[in-house]
Length: 312
Image (tube, rainbow, N blue to C red):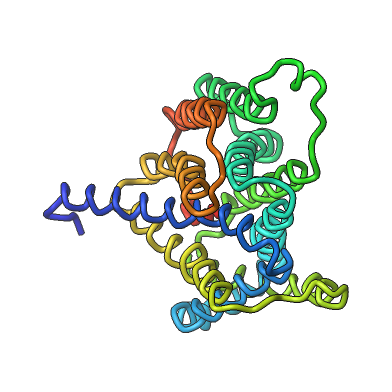
């Protein structure tokens, strides 16, 4: 049914898309901020376990009616859960032990679209437009500027740090997830899809969780950490996704995805505010290049068939 208040729909869509991005951006700050209190596998396990529990009553009706369909596509769903749930954020949380929240946000959110474009070109035979190619190059320049600190000699002698490599591994995992999501069977509802990948992804985190606990990397529980886990489980994993989906209904996919370009900006501001990290002119210029590149990459793109993309 067509809305009788198109302007209100647009404003609501903008509000919800921005809300989703603001919540998602906090994931990078948290990855750095709680690195001394909880291991990366444990944090990922608690996050997705909480999200699964929250989604269960919401998605149970659609899940129950689609169980046979989900079982038929079990191999596909396992790969989606492995890349997007089990590996992506776990790698980001590992990286949080070695690099700043600002670097996590800038490197993570910019390299993933580049990897996704390359994978889509290879496996989905998607064409790369001039705008997307230009956007990729501008994003790359922003990443190089960030990693070099604005010094050519640093760039020439640059070696990836352990944290940078983990961020890139996470970006590759998320890029793989995005490519797989584009092949989601239309018969599977978004609620069932979200619930099953949350559940399967959490199950696959159990071995890493057990190994981490056995190695003596125990969780130092506090009310602050409990709040962080609730924020990750309810906020970045459920509320943001639902807000994003409603925004897509109000604005359309093509307009909504542009709001994801704001993630590194919000993450940087949150890192400065909450963690006291120092922002420099290099961060500012890198951020501007990143946003410009991502806007270019999303210019004149055809709407995606699937909109159930979980960003962070």
